[in-house]
Image (cartoon, rainbow, N blue to C red; front, side, top):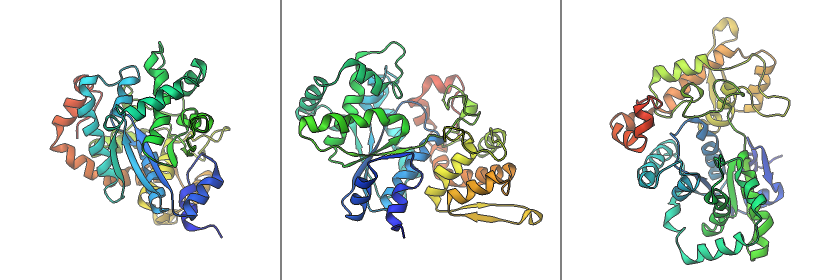
Length: 348
């Protein structure tokens, strides 16, 4: 029978490098991991997937750190101007800490250690080993790369070195981070550093469907974590949610509502109640995403029932964030003045 902690560590992951390493770290209770995020665009529900995995790993006995990678936000083609780094870092911290208020994690900021001599020494040494094409491949899924800047090539090398600077043996990220964290597997041994175990989560598709990117510049593609209740309900009910379809032929999620339920709400809350008319079998409570997805594919769970329940649960789950920002509009406006002016960010 699978150990309960091992089950939590492995559920809802797309890939683990390597599975044996992660299992050994969990069973020996010596896992120290981190999840890093650069404070760039407004905080939306796509972030609930890695945060749900953070919660899983903490329950599995891993000591988790959250890195607010402020310098990375500037290195990525100045997605965040230098003058906005501090306020956006504060904004991200508030969003994450409110969502993870029941989860024991340690918070740190990239600029608190990324200017140290030892950090730069390893950055120089690793940079001398990596070709431009390899650095481009590592950055291609994460940074803007429209007209690649030198900083965007340094970005993935810094992210790899963050693992050593933070003294972790587990790195958590979305599957789009794979090429970056695999740098630790390839190049850390050449520097005499032990590679980290990599845990990659799936990505939630856009509310408009898999052909549209979830982006702050496309308001109907995402839900900000402090959106008004009526806005959350409207977006969920309008969202792409094909009947009996969950994943595509490549096993990537194509149904955003199922993905939100499976990858975010179930891990964060432990269970998901679907309210249904008694004539349809009455309410049902899911504690296992695979069971819920199987019922959906077999037509036992109707899209409208799922949508209504996901909307209700999201509204309730996001209430602490919404309540906080109702009295802190200034933080959103200060962090994203242009986006607020253009109406791209709904205020609570």
